[in-house]
Image (cartoon, rainbow over all chains, first blue to last red; front, top):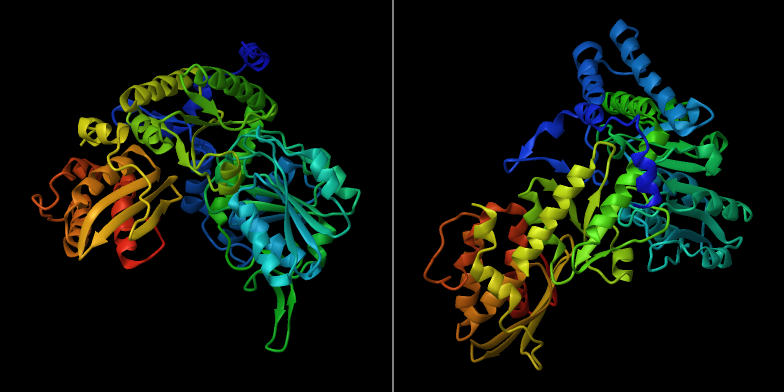
Length: 417
Length: 146
């Protein structure tokens, strides 16, 4: 047993059955077999408290926020703003003006790209990302580069799936106007050294955005400890609803930025000659937001806090170590992404068997995994694979489920070889 | 329909030992079919003479369904007219989308019919047929991503 496995086994106060009970969907059967959900990196399942919060809102409090004087509208606004407070605490922001509700992580990156970076860059300037980024942290920057003539530069990643920090240090200069890096890789599971990378970038006064989509469900995230300027959160990756996320931004930067979307809510006054903008965070929340989604996300954050971020990390690390060890027992199986510091994700390929076939066959054993390029085509291409099979863990998974995965993959091998 | 029908022996045999799996040099017609979403990528080669397909081959990396389908298709194509090939491509789609199709015409490829019960795999099975049509049309690359 590895250190992580031993440590998690020693965690006697983790009650896997009680955790699983909180997720109604886990009682479902697929093809007559109990669902083994190993696709949390694509979208996590929702605990009862999130489902209840959304239902409760629509049943008892549904109204628009920040609009009416009537009681229902005030109650809806109170719940919405309470969710914002929860998210502020959850990621360690200073105040609620720094918590912008978005449609998801993708919108957060696009908002920063267009409102913060675009007006600040031109030909000769550089926007820096890593080679392992998700398409959502590549394409918004390519758009800005096309619009401004800035150049997208890419920090190399090793064959293990780790950022090459020496190369990164050598690439830093005063022409770099933005560093955007993922906290945890969805394709490989790598936990990037975001504290160190932010510190290195800051020595050149480079603003830093962290894509936290895969981090908040698994790690104890504190934006002030990281020291970043922007941090993007995805709701549905952290057991919350889809279509909702959070952009954290440092207040003075958000204050200085122009609005991203125009519309209702984000204005103070409107005339045909000129409109003026609302204060933070409303300035960046044009239109009626996903109110139920935000309230559900608040419930998800509280749920994670109640279970305990550190306990989740310890438990999942043990499960990841166990799963990795068991997978490697399969003949011809190779793990893609072998960084020393990982969370949740086991990406793998098996000699002579296409990931797509593995996915279909093990689905019939009730096992849900993702196959393909995981919206990270560049890094998979570098690692020499067109796609992988990816099992990703959440707090509800167990060793018994890993065992089901292993026998299902073994069966697929037997069938296809 | 179950897994055993999807991965029936004929399909598995074509996947293990694909027919006409080589790069044709020179080919009169060729096109790349790719479905990046699944990681399927294969190139179809044709030798066409006087409106007939003299030989057909393919190469690439794809799942068992896409590989078996290409293997079966390249066997089927030899000796066919271009019109027949195009009609069969359309009919192969009919088969997988549960529409009426000509069993006799598609003989040799109907072991892929069970794919119709696996919507996420239909694009794999049709990839080679799309690539074949693209080759005839002089299109370099075709994708079956939705």
